[in-house]
Length: 182
Image (cartoon, rainbow, N blue to C red; front, side, top):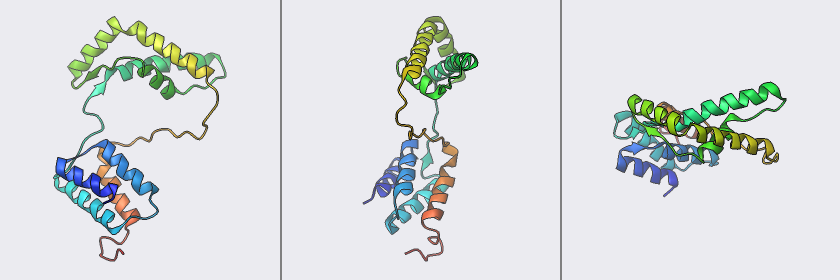
């Protein structure tokens, strides 16, 4: 049984297709030279289950990490200062990720919770956020130029699941629906 079939079976069993499962199906389809009929059939079962609601695509985020927005805001300000006064170009994402890996998460599921977390961070963590962003900027500026072939993580939304599965089926099994797939 292929990984696609296992993922689809898991989604059907759980009733949910997680962003990780979705990404893995996409990765397999993108890297496979050709899919088996069983894999096409599994994708078709998944598409049907998504359309009927038997399987629900879990949105990428049903919660937010307030720390992400605070760090991103700090990183953007700092990068803008540096880029305005030098010929250097910095990657805000790299800087924010470095700092976030060294700071506590502040998750919230409601606007009230997010407001509480923002206020808490301003009172208790603002200096630490600033220090970690400064450290990230220093590390970024001192890093050697390696792995120029690195690829940024792609951005997709949970709303695109049906379109992605449908386009995968069309791309890898253009004649599946009319019964002429081999």
